[in-house]
Image (cartoon, rainbow, N blue to C red; front, side, top):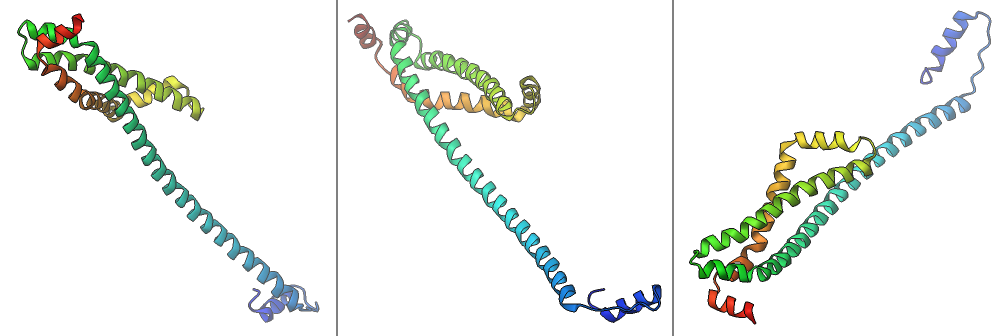
Length: 193
């Protein structure tokens, strides 16, 4: 209607005969331009906000990936240190098993079995603690509902368990190999000193 003022005048005089239509084009054009500018600015603002949100999402994912890798590396190092400590604590036991004629493979399997049991327990405890903490921080669902929901997702549970067990096996590989390959006599002699 704003684009054709003559048509507007005809419609008004058709409805209200004898009416004098005074056009103040400057006000009408200014109002139209203001509305169009506001609409353009609103669209531009919405588009800029969408781009900002996309950029923030990419940045969050990148930071999350970096932090996950850093936490995994720190945990692997920690588990490795625990493995060396455990291997040192079990030197006497490994020496006795080896002195009794237990093959190297069996000694290594005995030590790894303990690590696997601890890793499975750690995966279960970590899963429950993580889901509970996430539910508390989220505040939208009770922790039990969140635990059941995540527990139904077998991939999350399986990935957590396999990661913990895999990390335990990899981190304990060197200490177990060093311990199992030592001469039982030397191990037992050092244990009695």
